[in-house]
Image (cartoon, rainbow, N blue to C red):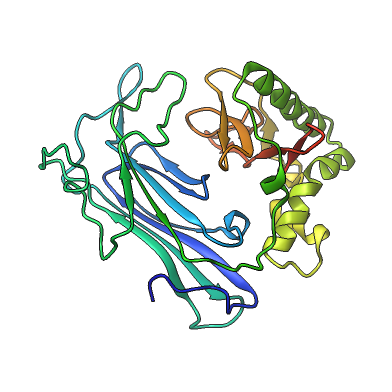
Length: 306
């Protein structure tokens, strides 16, 4: 049932499924990035998103753009949408541990047409069975160092109120984050703390740095053992047990300060969404990476929260 309410669920599990063909796309939930693909092949994926749900109204956002192709010296955006370009994004909820309880909360289904030349993007996009999707060409423009997104379309849709008694996250009450060099420099220092702790294999410090995130994931997924299980859930320090993984040099080339969560969350990433702290396989072309996201508390301190 489309637009179902989730208030009747006692232990809700929220998932976001994404089906993409022939189009580049970024998908966000409450302005929090969930998935990003520049190259627009065919993919089907599903994400657990309890930690991105907020109490009340939630907003689903899909940004589509003509996909990029690799060239000898760079990756360049194609000029038109592929004839088969299509994306369907669906937010669902179900009762944890109980079968046949899944309901659809929200959905956006876009088919950008390379054949339609109309400048009215509401006419050049098909939206299945929905009449309250907002379309924009300019809202939330994507940008990365060295890459120009010359064409993109943004579709947003608000859900009915979801779990009004859902936990309120620490970052929701954090300070607004300013996009400045000072902000970038101070957040980069936190990344260095993580890097140095990993380099020293200082598990005590790692558990300290990751603890706020572990606590909120434990709440989001109703983990029975609380913060202890939260650390296992986010795999705090577990990469150090992988004998094939080695810590890569701390890097800042091609990265940018990325502010999201409606100005309450931040990270530093490159176009591949790699943070300055990654591990690589010793012999194979494999990169091990984690998601890092931070908010600023009322004391103006960075806190790892996701």
